[in-house]
Image (cartoon, rainbow, N blue to C red; front, top):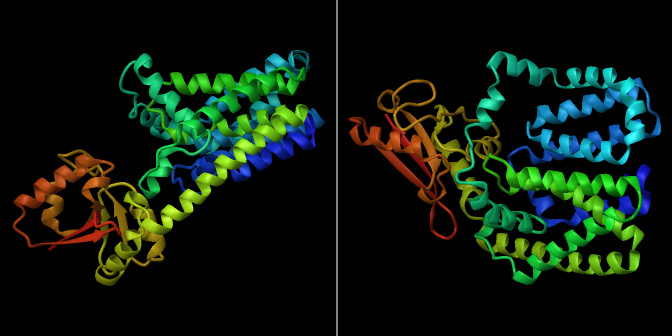
Amino acid sequence: MASVAGWRASAVAALVLAVHPAYIWQTVFDSGLIATWMLSVGLLALALAGYARAPGLGTAFRVGLAMEFGVWARANFLWLLAALFIGIAVSWRAEISRSLRHAPAAVAGALAGGFPFLLYQWISVGGTWEALSMYPAEGSLLSLLPARLVLLNEVLLADREHRAMWGGTPMPMWQAVALAVLAVVCLFACARVGEKIGRAVTIASALLIAMLLSSKMAIGEHHLIVVIPLLAVAAGIASARSPVLLGATGAAVFALCASWWHITAWSALAATGGVGLWSDGSYRLADEIATRYSDRVVTFVDWGLRNQAYVLTRGGVPMRELFGTAERAESGEAWEQIVKDGGVFVRNGPGNRQFPRPSEGLDRALADAPASVRRTNIFQRNGDVFAEVIDTR
């Protein structure tokens, strides 16, 4: 950004991302590859800056490499690519026409960077796109839009996905309004600076937001967080051009709100130990598994527990995940047969279930099982069941 908008604007954008609550929560605590997604954004920015400084086959190759690496990391990186390159094409029309001679090098870079992704699609016959089709949005766009706008508004500061770590605290209305106004003003000011980078960022931001809000996929905060880097850039450009009005006023509002949420998160996590998937009951679960079942394969039949258990037991316990339907596991075996063979099963507590159908099949099989069943509940600090360990022999 510094190469096209100056160091002052880039410093403001970097500072926004460095202290932005939702951005930090998503990249530190989210287990859905958000950090990898943002790494891809950074690599693409470096590649584009290199090409802007020295257009050529080598720098074009690196742009293609970064583009397809991002898609490999997370397929919906395509949303950002489409929005960004439309913004660039509109703002740098003359330069784009001269750059077409470097397109073959960019395509070659994309093929190199995305080879593992492309190979997987060929072997799986489009497995990624099949997986995406498993999460359709339920309802019409008109019915989904209000809720998505609320999520977008909250991800501008503190997303509810990660406020749930400590049981959730509603966002004050004044903060929601202040951040929405600040974002709109920054985009408007960014578009009016009279520079190509300002127009490109505004167009890309608007298009990316429109794609997300109108997507046929189920959209959550971990999708909407991708607009924050672009909005941070817009804030940097706008404040650098209007340091008194936007720079001082915007910084004061944002600093106040961000500090409030960091203090709230810190104190609430310390008081509750986390709730649900974020509970420090994970330590007690790891101790239970390591103490009793280090010599047996532990089967996780719900999402969100295996990774942390693996880390906390230092990989010392054999583990696997087994999902599926209420009738059969993904291996094709009926739950009745799996229980009959005996094993140790771990799942989230009743209030934390992520995929309930495998648990329904497991419960039905356990009710009919002739084998002895030993159940151990792992509690979180508020007394709710964090996880359940079921030992069948």
